Image (cartoon, rainbow, N blue to C red; front, side):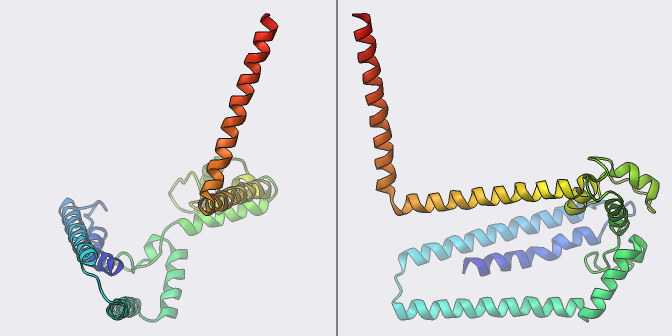
Length: 247
C-alpha cells in the first residue's frame, strides 16, 4: 500500500519536475517560475503521500482483519500494483515508440553530439547527443597506446586538448571505468578491482558476524563477560605482584 502511494506521488509530481528541463531560457538556464512550480508540486505530493501512509498505518493498527480479509486485501493491493506497473510500461512504450528506431536514434545522436538531438520536445526523448562519445574515443585511444600503466593521474585534459574534436576541456573522460583504465592502465584497474573486492568481502563478513550475534545474543554477552573477568583478574595479579615487590 505504501509503495503504491509513493509511486502515485512521484507520478503526480513528475510532470512539473520534467517541465523544468524542458523550459529553459535562451541562455539554457533554469527559469525560476518553473523551478518554483516543481518544488511546490513535489512538496504537496510529499505531504499527501505522508498523510495517506500515516492514515493507512493508523487504520491498520486499530483494525484487526481476519485471515481471509487480510488475504483479500493483499490480493487487491497486489493487483493494483501490477496494473500500475503495466500502465507505466505501456505509457513508456507509447512515448518511446518503436524500440529499434529509438535505439538507432540514440546511437546516432550519441555519436553526433549536441547538434544531432531533435529540436524541441522533451529533453529526455530528444536524443543522447553530447560530447561524451568524443571523450570516450580519446580515452580508449590513450588506453590502447598505454595499456599497462596509463597516461598518469589527471593527465586526460591535456591529452584531450590535443586530440579532442569538441570545444570542451574535460578534466576526466566522464566515465569511472575509462578514467581508471586511461590514467592508471591495467595495473591501476587491477588494484581498483582488488580494493572493491576487499570492501565487498568486509561487508559480507560484517553481515555474517551480525547475523551470528543476532542468532546467539547470549553467547556474545557471555564472551564480553569473560573478557571483562579476565581483565579484572589480570589487574588483581598485577597489584599483588607490585605489593610483594614493595615488601
